[in-house]
Length: 247
Ligand code: NAD
Image (tube, rainbow, N blue to C red):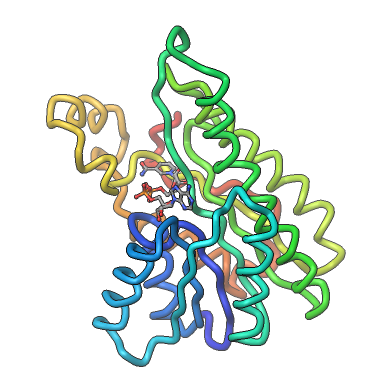
């Protein structure tokens, strides 16, 4: 579904991002994955090469809060693969700090990675996509962008901002043939969720109409659809992949 395409995936070293990278490679794309540390980037690249030595995948670890570092990393991908068709802004941190314990620094830290870092990757990539006549951007939002959560107000706030950014960029970039969408996962079995004790996870599962948590692959499938030509008329969409838990 992605033969001949080039994708950049931030937060691609584990969890949902790693599942996206793997699915994109399986579908014929060349992929550049970004992670937070060289060590985890190398580990992810080794594990992908072990799966299939033919896959064309490279990695980098720019500080996503540094616009110049991100722009340089995006330029390196263009130099390596000649173009960028797909940008997946997936890196993110969650937060469950109760309001009484919040600091301005904590709020800013979450907003910086979950929102500002997306713009740092979008700005240089849009220039490349405009030059080449189009592309697509997919952001990772969250179910809580729609319904909120009981503590850690920065996280749903940041993800609601991701939705706003997605809708607005879709309007602004549509005339340049750049589609912009988001995926809003529900509870997904990544390291963070796997670490939760059974007495926490079981009541949550009862609240999910499909009676199970999502797998990273469930979420990656939505990223594949949105990146593919099958979604050629889909833009400005926030696609929920949450087993209807938000309802
Ligand atoms: P994860 O913690 O397993 O992976 C997060 C990724 O982001 C990692 O690859 C990590 O390297 C990267 N990252 C974190 N901090 C970074 C930083 N400062 N600089 C660069 N990269 C950084 O998380 P996940 O569960 O796979 O989450 C991926 C995305 O999905 C996030 O945006 C998250 O908010 C969103 N999400 C997750 C769930 C869930 O239940 N797991 C639900 C809804 C939304």
